[in-house]
Image (cartoon, rainbow, N blue to C red; front, side):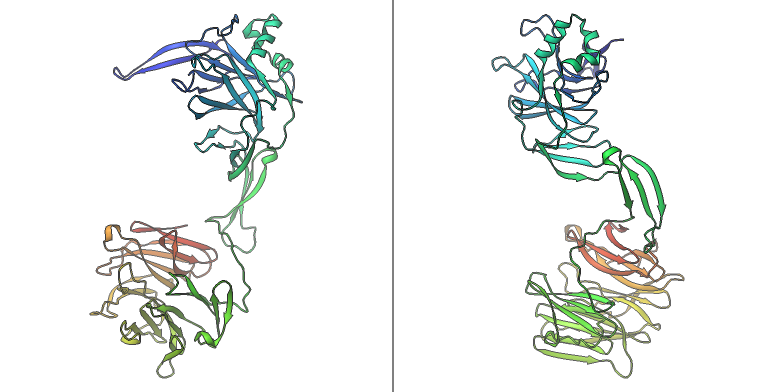
Length: 553
């Protein structure tokens, strides 16, 4: 049989494709790449074959007085490659360096990468006098190659991780193992064999091609690896780690030197930046913003069952004691910086502590009751006493004092509270979420004319709320921001529902997802400038906003 290279032309006026030109090529041809034309080069195509690279063009003619019109160049071969076995070129790519300069890269089925250059005279850019193929480096076998405008080579690997490489040297013709089309044509002419028969016999290429031994990278170096499991040869699913709830996926990947055993876990990977030993098991952790430090953290407050640890954040992180103003002999239920005056509020089981500079003022719980749950932001504090009584405090922006503004009895013990955060351009949060032990979550108003008035509620079925969080999504065009309610339940699942920012009505179709075997703790975070929620169960999760809905990752 005969394999042909064909040119097809599209007539845009008639919307018709016609075959313009065709020429026979080597039977082993399997890939091609376009050569720059016009003012940049001679145009035409490079055809990758077994043992050879061929250049073809519609207007080809003898350019150096030889009898044949074909420009074919044999490729350097490995020293130990079998004589009767060819080396197939699997991919070719062309890079335009600048006006009038370009080169091509071709990769073989063994991973060897060759630099292909065309000999084009300066006085006539339409003529190609010869081809030179020289060894560049040996890379993992790829499904293709792509060179970016920044001269970075991307090789999507067929087996194993993909690689991004940077060129250390490209003008390598003088020192590299190379061969030319002129030498190939001379060898073919001396053999006295017909062209098709000569080029189809691998032993002929073996006899004329120069030899090389693969080495470590010389002209390229890897700058980035993109992980890939391909090909997966075997999979085992099971909880074999011993301390996790979700099963892991154990996979055998790759082939040959790129083979690996990989363990997959559902979720996003986390990079551990620092580890610090603690004297016990913490119950909660808070960061206190420094109002004079452009949003930076001033203190890290760690709460234990019977004490509070305060860490000062500066050039180093150091433990401080009473000089911080915190009550360190009691656990901390909520903590936040207040306004721009530098004040700090600490809520503990016995009351509320307001720290302003060197002065400290306290509000004590009346009678023998204790604070069961609390939440605070920069101007609002909401506490829940044992029995279901809520007490709401507000910061007076003029005097800087905390004032008791309203109370309410919800009729059931409170297990979780959140006053939300003030949206962009607002001085207060308009709603507070209250999770009760009767398996309900209630949304209360914090508007001045309807303090602690219930706006809506939702039932949770048999599960009880363990934590709640109200998060604001960024508003488009300065409009009203959407509000999302996230509830962490004690059965290890999380519920997310939309909240009407005007009426406070909770959506009737919340989304629910099982996250782990432990109760879910929910807190607000900022991820890449976007308001998100962190959900901690037997594994950490992140809830991100997707319009009026949310998704867990």
